[in-house]
Structure formats: structure tokens, C-alpha cells
Length: 120
Image (cartoon, rainbow, N blue to C red; front, side, top):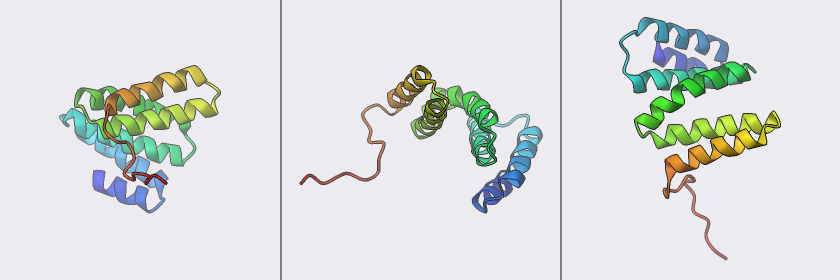
């Protein structure tokens, strides 16, 4: 189900992706926390694509502490970026700042961007 959901999401069929992720989350009661968090992350991404911003945020907020506990800094940074972006659009600048700082703490000194800018 996870692969079906990701394929549907990749094909811009986010409504079908949500259904696949829902089924995967329902079927896998004994799923590892990290795998569950990944499903929640991807379902949140599919929900955002459907314009379901609050539902997407709920999935991401559920996944975030799991990724933090597993030290999955890439997922933490991505979720924090998405949530901060949503807060900025909702004019919740203090909340956006707090969540952005949370993401930055997760990545620490590692580079967030794959490209390094060459100086002059």
C-alpha cells in the first residue's frame, strides 16, 4: 500500500494517494514508528496537494516527534519547513519562527542545501 500511495502521489493523483496511505496506516497496526511516521508524512503531503492544509499539518505534527526521537533530521527539517510555511501564510509569525527554529536545531551544523554557492 505504501508503494501504491507513493506512485499515486508521484503521478499527481493525490486523492488516490490519500486512500492508499489511509489503508496502509489501518492495515499495519504493528508498524515500526519510523515507517508509520513516513506514511503520515507522505499522506500529509498528499493532503496538502488537495488543499487540505489543516489535515496535512495534523499528519506532520503527529510524525514530527517520531522523527525527532529517531534523529531523522531530514524529515524533521522538511516537516518544520512545511509547517512554518503554512504558519507564515496564516499570519502566525511567532509560531512560524518557533517551528523553523525547531527544524534548524534538528539539522545542527549540517548543510540543509545540497548546493554550495561559489564566492565571487
